[in-house]
Image (cartoon, rainbow, N blue to C red):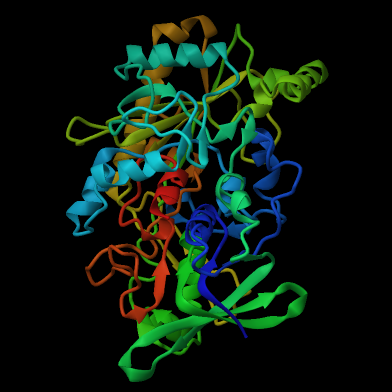
Amino acid sequence: MKTFDYIIVGAGSAGCVLANRLSASGEFSVCLLEAGGQDDYFWIPIPVGYLFTIGNPRTDWMFKTEPEPGLNDRSIGYARGKVLGGCSSINAMVYMRGQASDYDHWASLGNQGWGWQDVLPVFRDSEDYVHGPDQWHGQGGELRVEERRVNWEILDAWREAAEESGIPKIEEFNRGDNFGNSYFQMNQRRGTRWSASRGFLRPALDRQNLTVFTNAHMQSLLTDSGEGRVKAQGVRVLLGNAGLQDISARREVLLAAGSIGSPQLLQLSGIGSGKVLQDAGVPVLHDLPGVGENLQDHLQIRTIYKVSNTVTLNQRYNSLIGKAVMGLEYLLFKKGPLTMPPSQLGAFARSDPDQPSANMEWHVQPLSLDKFGDPLHTFNAITPSVCNLRPTSRGRVRIRDNAAATDPAITLNYLSTPEDQAVAVAGLKFTRRIMAADALAPFEPKEWLPGPKVATDDDMVKAAGDLGTTIFHPVGTCKMGNDPMAVVDHHLKVHGVDRLRVIDASIMPTITSGNTNAPTVMIA
C-alpha cells in the first residue's frame, strides 16, 4: 500500500493550491489524485476555448440536473472540470472575490476567521496583479490577474446606459462593495488562460515530495471506526491501468472534489444522511444530515437584444474574413476576440432599496446564441444576462446507488421561492430600463428574448424559467458551521470524523456575490 502524509482528492482550483502549499516546505509527502487527465488539450490555454471544453467529455464531467420545476421542467447540462486545474481549466476566467458582506455574514454565523478583513490578505497573497500591489491587490503570487484585451463599441455604450439607469461606473469589482458597472478582471497572462494548474501546480511538479496521479477515479474513503470515533485512513481509488488501489494517509485526507464530487464521495463512504445512504444501499458509518444539502447556484437569465449600426462577435464570427482576422490577432498579438471570456462587462445593483448590498449581477456579452453550444446568430446582437446573487432556493446532491461510477442526482430547485421569483422579475425589468437608455439609442436595440409580449410579472417568471440556466457556481453542499446541518467546522474539519477535511467551494455556508473561482482559491 502506498502511504503519504496527505492525500488530496481532486486537482481543481482548491486541490492545486493545496498541493503547492503542502509540498512547499519539503517536510510532508503529498499525493494529489485527479479523475481527469492532463491539461494539455489544445483549447484549454486559449481563452475562447471554453466553447470546446465545456460539454466535452475529455474535460467535463458532463453532469445533467434533475428536471427543474422552476425551469419549466427542463433538465440542463451542469459542467464541472474533469482535468488538471478542474473548473479553472474550462471556466470564464473572471476574477471576482465577492463582496465584504458575503464574508462578514459567514463570520456572523460563528465561523471565526472568515470575515472580510480576515480573507482579504489571503486574496492578496495569492495574486499577481497586472497593475502592481496596493491595499486591495497583491503582486508576485501565483494567480495572474489582468485586464481585457479586446474592446467593443456596444459594451462601452452599455456602460453609459447602465450609468444613466442608476448603476455608476466604477474602476473594479474587487474592493468589497461591488455596486456599479465595470469591465471584469481575468485570470489570464498575456492572452492565455491562467488556471490553477498553470499557476499553482506546474511550479510544484518537480518537488520530490509531491506525487500526482491522473485518471484516478475515487471509489470511497478508507476509514476506521474503532474507539467510538470514525477516522479517515486513506482512499480507495481506481488508478488507470493499475486497477483498484488503496492509498493511506499518515496525517489527513483532504477532499477538494468540488460541490458535486465532495458530497458524493462522503456519501459513498457512509458519511451523510442516514436515510439517503440507506436508500442508496450504503451502510451508515456516520450520520451527518447536511452532506449534499444546501446546494446554491447563480441562475442566469439570458436576454437577447438585436442591435444595429455596430459590429458584434456574431458578425465577425459568421464572416470568413472575420474569422481569419480574429485568428491572426491571436496568433500574432494574443489580442482580439479569441482572448474573450464568456462575458467581459459586468454590473451590480439592488433589486429593491431594502437590500443591504447589491444582489443582482449582469454579465454582458457582445454576441448571442440560442443556447450554449449552438452557433452564434447571424444578426448582430448582445446578451445582457442577469442573475440573483443571494438566492433563497436550496438544492441538493445525492448519490443514486452505491456505485462510484453512477452520476449523483443534482437538484437545484431554482426559482422555488417567492423571493427568488421577485428578484428574477426585477432583473428583467431593470434590464429593459438599461436597454431603453439614451446611450444605446444609436444602436436601435430590439428585444429578441424574452420579447415585448412578455409583460406581466407572471409572464416574466415563466420567461425566467424558459431562459434561465446555470452560471456554473455550485457551492454549499458541505457547508461550514456549527448548526445541525453543518458538515465542517471553521477549520474545515468534518464534524464527527477525524483526519478528514473538505476544502473547496462546497464549504461556503452561503454563496458569494459573483464568480466563485477566486473565493475557492482563497479557501484553499
